[in-house]
Length: 140
Image (cartoon, rainbow, N blue to C red):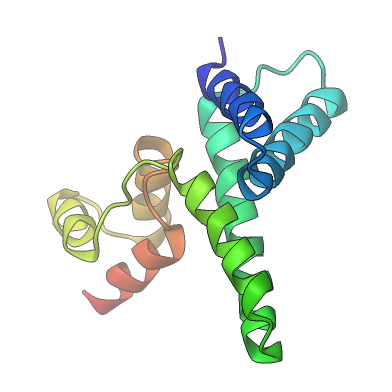
């Protein structure tokens, strides 16, 4: 059962009823990528973690778009992109802080890069930025 995509589809319907273009655009983007993922391999079960990963990719793309609009001085577009990001962030769980990541790494018996990265990707998928884990690990 995939609950997260159902929540996003409901939120998309609400945004449509409210005529909220920013939210609708953000949620539609997730739904269409979900459908694309499903069509590539209909037998594969798409988990909430997969949907979360899609959302995070879209947020990163929006960040890049936001940056280029800021450089171009297109304030209206900047605000629109920010609204889309805010709408998507409602579905992303709180991310682990650098301090929390450090504590987890220090609790591991083996702190080699492959072991630590595997531990985080298996146990904290969607709740941690893997590049931040790498940065914290290298700082220890």
